[in-house]
Image (cartoon, rainbow over all chains, first blue to last red; front, side, top):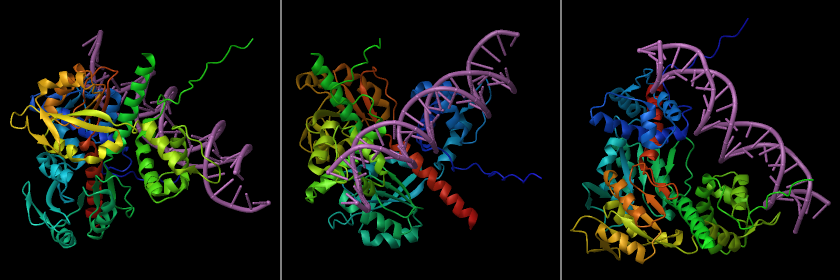
Length: 227
Length: 227
DNA sequence: TAGATTGTTAATCGATTAACAATC
DNA sequence: TAGATTGTTAATCGATTAACAATC
């Protein structure tokens, strides 16, 4: 007699969602948002793909992960699609976050009002520099690092943003982990070592520059050769 | 009689180098740089991989694209490897670049002294705001946008950095392209439309946030369910 | 109806990983 | 020598793209 098959998870789940998909969803969100503002009622994957220079089939598959169903010939209801993507991304309720390292980049990020619509609300910032401590930057108070663990626990903070220099990044990450933070957005050019259940997303500016400048260098070499 | 086979290109070329490889090379560069500073003479892919949490075979393949040859049992000569990666990336001679949009992010990037070692030297900045025009930010003078085409031609600028708001990005990109810029580092959350021979590298902060916050949201949902 | 679009399955493509001979 | 490492070829894996029936 055949064995009973595994019961599939009933709740739509992030498990098994390819990372490229997760990276593309915010783009759809933005496009759909604009359409909603323009009063458009329905949108097709073809349209979204055209705006973002993406294959319509890919858009459709990505969107399917959020659990929404569309209508053949019509597409998706704009408002419903926007909701679906936003809740899938966890952007309906922004997470409170701490920012570590109030240098030029940290200050710039504190100035971004828009993060609240994208899942993150920076509620306090930390720095070791006694000159910065106690000041207020873009409405957020700067605390010394030693106050972080206590405040993180009291305020139930789950997310940390690292904008410290490379040589301070690992230590700062350790502090975040010890303080119970679960997710780290890392802007330091460092491969952090953290427990495997901690979520790390590293923003690699130099990686981008690697692509850009190697391509440009090649392009210029070619131009020179042809001349 | 067999036909003569295609003659392979003699010069090592960026053509056909996978983009993931180009993105990883800067990491190797950094690790190898530090080893050189420490006076280490040879380095293996195993060591590099361990530092960056990458598979040694992948490191070896990536490095091979730069054209260097190593020695079995020994690895690569640190100095030679560093040179090889740097010249492959086009980082030996930083490209002069213009920055458009002196907001908080633009200002932060102007403050990054380190770009010069990574292929980019920001030589001037541009903004439409008359209050900013004429001032000096981190040693660079701010010009009005209308002066860009002329200056770009005179200074033979090939690279532009876009740090304008999303709704100004396409227009600014058009201006850059008309001014003869070949490569654009785009920090605006916008899919730019440019001629196909123009190199664009878009820094997608919200894409990163998509990954981070969807994973965190899932993680928190799970924790809640189990409780 | 005709035709655009969805949802889904199959084919393709490319990158990562594994395997292994050559080497010092 | 023994064993770690390179260079390279083959196998695996996963994502993108193509194909197509179902639908409104």
